[in-house]
Structures are given as C-alpha cells and as structure tokens.
Length: 362
Image 1: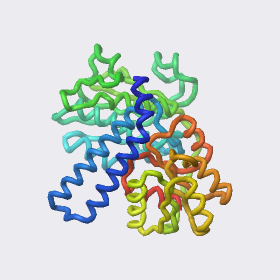
Image 2: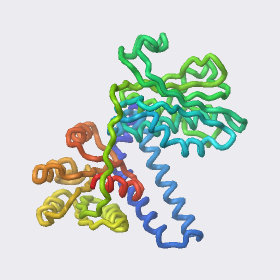
Image 3: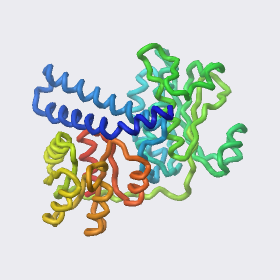
Image 4: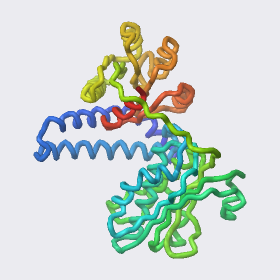
C-alpha cells in the first residue's frame, strides 16, 4: 500500500487536473440545457463519475497520509451540528441519530477531513444495521490519558484528548475480523457494495491529523469507533463575516481547458477575471493591473510555480489574498503552503466550491 500511495501521489496532480477540466466543462454545459432532458441526465452522470474518480484518488492519498490538510480551530459539536441534515439523510428514516449538544470540544484539524471521517464511520454504522430499524449515536467527551482504554495508554502520548465516538446497535464486529478492519480493500460487504477503503481512509486522515482511531470493546451489542484528537483549551474564536465583494481576480493555470472553465465559472458568479497561462504571465499581469484583489493559482506549473508566484506577489503587496489549487501537493509544497498562510482547494473541484473559497478570500 505504501507503493500504491506513492504511485497515487505521482499521478494525482495530472489526473485531478484532467478530472477538473471534465467536471467544470460538464457543469458549464449543464447550465445551458433543459434540466429535464436526456442531455442534462448524461451531463449529471459525467459529473458524478468525475467526482467518484477524484474521490478515489483522495482516498488513496489519505490512506498513505499524503493528502494536503489545512488545520484550523474546530468546535467538534458545531461541526457535527452542521453535518446533521446530511447524516440524517444518509441514515434514512429507519435509523435514528443522536448528536451531542455540548459546545467547546476544540481541536486543531482540517474540518473537511473530519467531515469525511465522520461520514465514513456513520456510513459503516448504517451498513452494519442494514434494513432493520436501528440507532446511531455520536458522542463527544474530553478524555485524560489516564482514562483511556488500558491497551491504548501504552502507545498514545500523555495528554488530553477530544474523543468523538460513533456507535451503532448492529451485530458488531466478529472477533475474527477485528484485526483486519483497517486493512485496505478488506470488506465484509457484498460484491459491488463497498470498496474496502472507508475505514482505511478514515484511519489515514486521523493519523495525519495527529490522532488515533480505535475500535472499542463495546460491552453491549453493536460496534463503537472512537476518534481521539489532541484537545485544545480555550473558547472558540468567532470568525468575522467577510463582506460580499466582486473584485478583480488574477487566475494562473497552465492547463488551457481548466483555465477557461475556471474563468467562466468565476465570471458567472460576477467576478472580473484576468486568466493567464503560468506564473511569469501572472507576474506581468499583476504589475499591469494594480486593482487585482486576489490571486487564484495552480500549485504545479512550469517555470514559476504557484508557491513561488504567491511569494513574489506577496512581496510586492503584503497581505494579498491567495487561493492555491492543486491535484496534489508533495511534502515540500505542503510545507511551503503552511508557511504562506494561503487558502487551498484540491482538484478536482466543483465550481460552487471554488466560488465559496474566493468569496471567503475577499
């Protein structure tokens, strides 16, 4: 699997860039055809399959712990509250859901990665319950090292943890399978019903976030998976809402199809866009257009890449809002991104996600 992860890392940028072009083109086309026609149905299928392909790449990167994560201060109860409508729809009417209400369980983690972990665990709980009525309980608590399970105290550092547990009342995990549940491609589901990457993906994301994912020895019927993340003290910081604005965006992308689709997507949202091919052209355009308010750039480009471009433009205008996008950022690029204080969006992305990121920047 380490080899598979390295292979995925080597191909991720190019594959995600191509998928991004396919996804954006299909999205743009879908706005120009009748919503109830066969063409709209076909375009919707193209979008779904492109998203599935991108998700598979991200799963491989997550399992091999090479996905780019952007940790921020997260209130876990607030995150679960935002996810509640999606989780209830995922479980269906025959499975009940209990969520914690207490706020203030804070961690430093990537919220999108945490959402994927929760989704994977709740999906597994739903599949374990099956068609019969059942219940899934998501709980939160702050746990000191001395209160951890006995076998976990031997390998988990001595500190306080935020423990997020997902428990179901299904049949539980048979003793003979407990040692294999985090293996990639291992699944107890029928053919075509699962990839065997759900739990390994969650495991990889949690480990990359500095935490642990354990299958608990539940005393009653069912299974309980607990995510342990280092807890942080203090009240949640309230982010101030950014005013809505439609400034001039400088877009640097060397892939022509994706550059065109991204430009059109931003223009449809009301932005003015200068779209250029590569870092050198972006530098020239920035100098000729002092009204540029934000940079959107690919990370990996020939010549001046996105990280270097951001550094150069920030040197000329400190505090310039920057959104970097990439199908894959290697370790050196991730380190550089962390030091720049820029926003990041993984390819392939939906145009709506791009617009939200740009809205948040400016």
